[in-house]
Image (cartoon, rainbow, N blue to C red; front, side, top):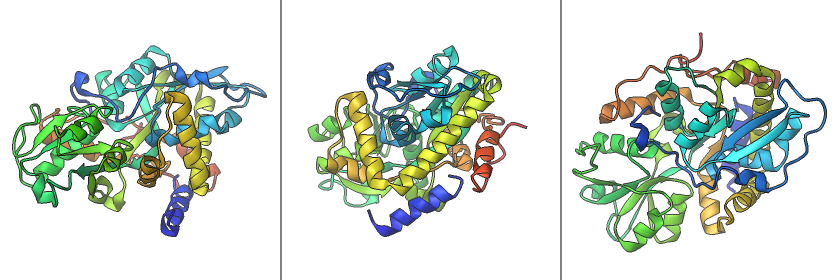
Length: 371
């Protein structure tokens, strides 16, 4: 890993370290497995005195953008902070299913992308969840067939895949198209660019078959396409202030937060310590995350996919709240939703308590926190 990136990761660890769309159109950005597979691997034993809950049920995706959960659970860092309170992990392959599990009480805390988090919040009138922390930034790229597309202007008239209508990458691509001055109907995807909504799992096959000319997708799909001969044309991070935007948040059910604040605080403390460990032990953390993926999905990522995918993701504690609002604004601009009321979606008081105790700066809720 370049020294500059290692330093950047350490700095991120030292610092406080979207969108209610059509419900049927929202999924998360990751690769998934059945929701019970996280229990296939023996978890570290809960030892010591339990907190106010005997068990905390944590949901996440078997995806590199959920590295905090992948590594923290596998390495026993979460269980260590929770003592006698048992960690019960579950994995999901779509944001809506994780939100449903949270609403049903099947999980208490979840790692999830911005779009389903906001959808879950607004669809219940702000009563279902809170965002209590960040986990990852970046990890989204525009990759293209270099024989057909050599410059960004060449995107016009081409067929570009996004994961799904209204998901975080779809909105980002539609906004980028708009900034170029091109016209696309958001619902149909037809216009100056053909936006082809394609599940991440089959996008590499679609690329190989020639049915798409490129894709605006998260990792590791982007690196899988590059391994098939595609070329990275744009990293979405370059479009954001400080090259940072939220890709994974930590959410909690409001009931669990109210009933078990000590457990929530312990999970956040584990998350902060896991992120610090990841940023200080890059190679070991990458191997750990890949081993967790192998355990959960049955297949590890090959080096030619794992290495560039891992390189493009920043593991942080800051939820980058201002970028969540910006993503919502992009969706409104695209005509995919009416302007949402996001007031109260964040409760960063527990995280800031943890950060303060660790001697780190507090993070901002960008005016969207509980009063």
